[in-house]
Image (cartoon, rainbow, N blue to C red; front, side, top):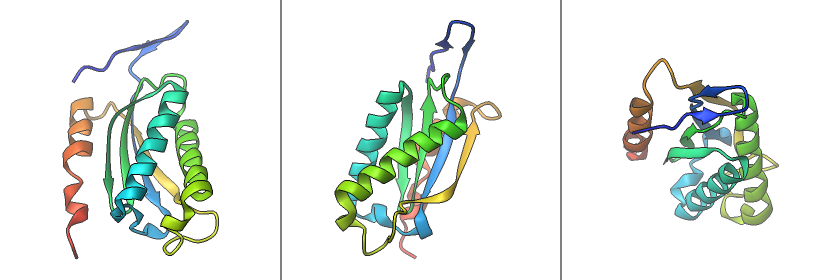
Length: 141
């Protein structure tokens, strides 16, 4: 996998993040394929608006893993706030009926999250993990 360098007026670099967003109360809303497809579409639309690239995305029943590249203009905090805030607003505003039996109030995402800049592991390792290692979460308990 080749990740292009981001070039700014005063900087050049590879700005990649591995982020995990968890659904509020760890509810398994992504078992509904409609919810999964909508959140995926909203994340992709917001990423395009922000000028970032979602290099890989995969879902567990109650969370999403993202591998984001070309994020040079965005801090990890701002990137997470933009993506989580937009998807939560759009899902609550337009599709609440799909998950209201699992989530209540204004919540969609859990308050906390995970984000790591890619550097201590290679981008290929993170991309492989995001694309291939989520199947374990779908096993029936």
